[in-house]
Image (tube, rainbow, N blue to C red; front, top):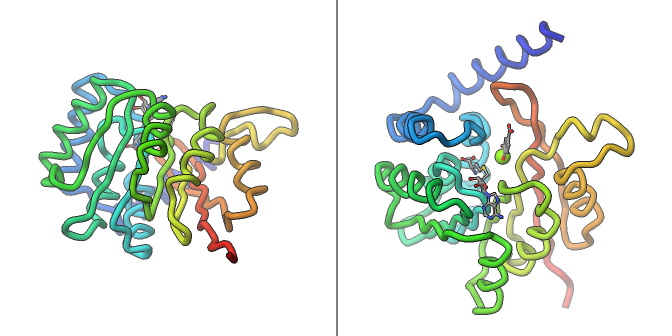
Amino acid sequence: MAEYEDRIHGFDKYTSGLFAPEDDALKQAREDMDREGLPSINVSASEGKLLHVLALISAPRRILEIGTLGGYSAIWLARALPAGGKLVSLEIDPHHADVARGNIARAGLADRVEVRTGPALETLSQMIAYGEEPFDLVFIDADKDAYVDYLGKAMALLRDGGILLGDNTLPDAVLTDGADSGTKRYNAAVAAHPDLVSINVPVLRDKGIDGLLLSIKRTRAA
Ligand code: SAH
Ligand code: DHB
Ligand code: MG
């Protein structure tokens, strides 16, 4: 097993070194998170770059992120926005939100990124009730037990043809029949959803392999 983990680590080091080197803003964002006592559960650099490239492919004007932490993934995503584009990121913890706002400002993205504090399910319900303009891309990365609920809200806020992304979709629970986890339930709900075309993409992380569930919302015939 150790040999396998060494190989994953080596593949991640190689890939991120070549394709996802961090500039000062990203390095400082991680340092700030550490200093402020935030957990190191942000996406890896190579997954951040994957988010960035997926966003460039879909050329979004509006991105929604659920789960901000210190703003690390928000920086990768927001850097794919055109001038005048917008990323709204939802975070329950006011301290996380503060750290994120600082990191986003230092990255020069304060004009494009808005961090909204509060329980995401409530914020999402309000956004739907108040007729929030649809998003072109939604990235779900908050509390795993609520992913299936976030799926329902995200579908209401995502435009036809938009991209839906869910992080941490290869939990160990998928290796055991009957074992339960929030993202395993999310995977099943997405796979069964008639309006989503999806694939679970393995991603390299420092600690091992995880998944990013990539979906496109199909356009329904009228
Ligand atoms: N996307 C970030 C990592 C997010 S970690 C990155 O890759 O950089 C998950 C975050 O979701 C944490 O900051 C946690 O406080 C937040 N969170 C947990 N439950 C939440 C909820 N109910 N509503 C909004 N945010 C929540
Ligand atoms: C962990 C990683 C994540 O990407 C996340 O969103 C939550 C937790 C973890 O490694 O524990
Ligand atoms: Mg995550």
